[in-house]
Image (cartoon, rainbow, N blue to C red):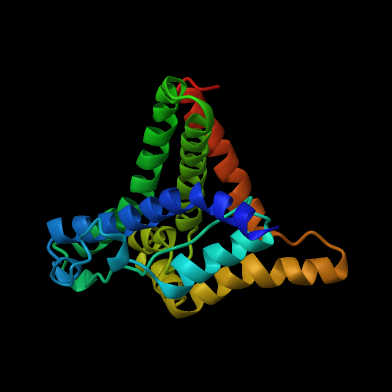
Length: 229
């Protein structure tokens, strides 16, 4: 894939990815602030400025790698996690769940808005219409993907925090102890298992089974509800 093609592909992914990860993290910080913890607010992380949320690996290197190795068909990333002091929340277990849900909830909202905006695409023409349409389609896809991915019940993902907040303490405590190893498990499922599967001749794309397929279904539902399909 030549440089021009990569830049063209990147131009319809950069805006959706930056908005998705920036607003996701800003939502966590804003909800935490409203529920009693101003840690993120004092650090300037309750902000729509994407540069305050950029993570070198998750926001830059990982999306670039995926864009390159998928020949411009796929880009995925994450931002620097917003710091939350859960002990400062007014009602620890309830508020921890609400803070965790804020990020995926924001992604779901952005996906719905992006799908609805498809109704204005016909008012444009030519390359501009195509470019806007591809941005909106990618916005729906990346936001549904982030929503489903982050709701996996594994700390430090949002779904893991929701599970810890909802489960009874005897079950919540061992799950919470996976916080430090959780991201390694996730990265292993995304990169290592498929690589091993290719060597052995098996389909071990766990990430696609658990995230990609549900995200595709959710995207179809959103488009249908928006009257696009």
